[in-house]
Image (cartoon, rainbow, N blue to C red):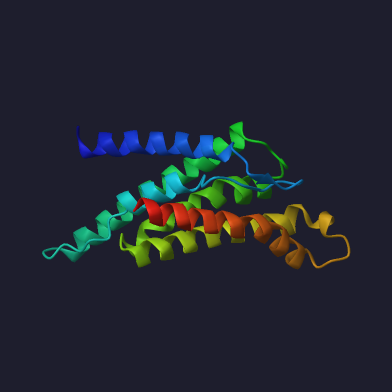
Length: 182
């Protein structure tokens, strides 16, 4: 099987597996957000496995191009997962900012997980960065779209606390599972 076919097949399997895991909710918040048994892990593992960071001793430019290509593929696969989540998953808002920052960009940034390499430290750093970027996306959506839920509180603080309540647990579960699998 060619490398491209293997990559495409693995991408489809990981997207499907991530979607199934996202529908197993250990805990759900009333206005969106949930803790799952590692629903981000398949996408993160794809990004870690396929984002090539290796330097070619002969041609740094070629190596850089390969890195950008494989990173682009990882970002695309993660974005497809976000689009699938939006189309088939529960929706809390149809506001364009919510669609973009709660689904498309929020999942798309998970594709950055592989940029620090495949060492344990690199994997943990990539996972933390990716999940943090997803958290930032949810904060932006919360401030722009769900600010009325903050009441008299500062919408930024409300959004950070609300989204942090489930994303922190999701990060912990994701790190534990990802490190166990590498």
